Amino acid sequence: TQAFDAAAVRADFPILQQEVNGHPLIYLDNAATTQKPNAVIDAITDYYRNDNANVHRGAHALSDRATQKFEAAREAVAAFLNSPSSRQVIWVRGVTEAVNLVANTWGRSELREGDRVLLPYLEHHSDIVPWQMVCAETGSSVEPIPVLESGDIDLDALDSMLDERVKMVALNHVSNALGTVNPVQQIIGKAKAVGAKVFIDGAQAVAHWPLDVQALGCDFYAFSGHKLFGPTGIGALWGREELLDAMPPFLGGGEMIETVSFSGTTFNTLPFKFEAGTPNIAGVIGLGAAIDYVQSLDRAAAAAHEQDLLEYTLALAADIDGLSRVGHPREAVGIYSFLLAGCHPSDVGMLLDQQGIAVRTGHHCAQPLMAHYGVPGTARASYTIYNTREDVDALMAGIRKAKALFG
Ligand code: PMP
Image (cartoon, rainbow, N blue to C red):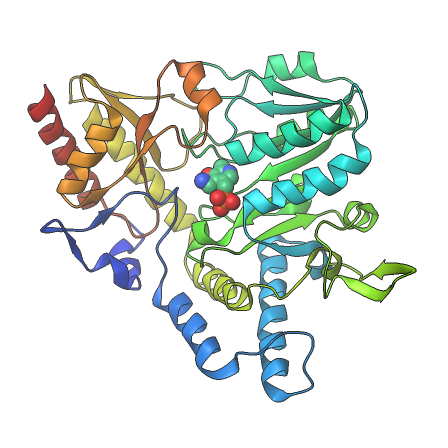
């Protein structure tokens, strides 16, 4: 019996009550983006129906209300991350923009010729490419940290790579391609011992357990709202206050300034220094509602439920010849990355879609990792709070059907 009531949670998500290709929708692409509960959809429409105005500017009631909701969401994110202060929470479009912000501000001002930036082979392209771009300009290098066959980071290899030229270690908290839960606390300790900064990409972690940036001891932490039942186009970058204070601005424009004249401009204080222009106000408010929604759940029971789905998947998969999991990390969230012998992942995806089952196929924006396994891509089912064992049964039936057609 399951303590967590996934069926009740499912009822909060209107999009899930539909049929696709004549079958009830089974949405197993949660690592790409999660669906949105009524609470989030309502918060966004309520904002546009009743409060829409620009923030921090107007001397009128709507602007006051919009600003209050906007800043309340920042407080909610600060509490969600256990940040010492909401000044350390910067609104960004998502993890991609967060990495670009840090690479272009901290990276451009701190990286020197010969400096090293270390990233595991597990990384998402958004954690790799911005560092490559900045390192190419600063004469520093991006070096991959080896990953074991299991999909775990090779910590011994990391130890042998760390020296005082390493200025940044950037990695995801959880791999989107394999579900690996990285031992971030341990890695942060190792990086700190040589004086490196650490950027943690929490894109795949936020929806799974409570986070605590102070306990982790990282320098930067970022997540995307859309992977946490919130809207697309909004996320948060958290940083240590002294680092954020010392970093130059990223984008220039309104809101991020204190005074502007043609003889020189001075910049606003945190967090506004990094928030040029009119922000995604509705997105911020929607993200605030998503955080309230998530906090209303029993998160330990939700995590146990997702683990049960993964274990149930692995047990059923063992009975299907030719079905194999890519990677077998020591610890993983509810992500099942798989291959079906004789059937290309994109064909698996298409055949599952015909049965109303949504999975992701391809390289998962992790081409170096796919090269490590010598595969062009995988099919990936990713679970969250509204998935059930019946969804897993449907996935396995779908895989059997695909196998019968191709086998
Ligand atoms: N990192 C990881 C681990 C991800 O899964 C994703 C999204 N697939 C990203 C970064 C990028 O997030 P976004 O596209 O929301 O900026």
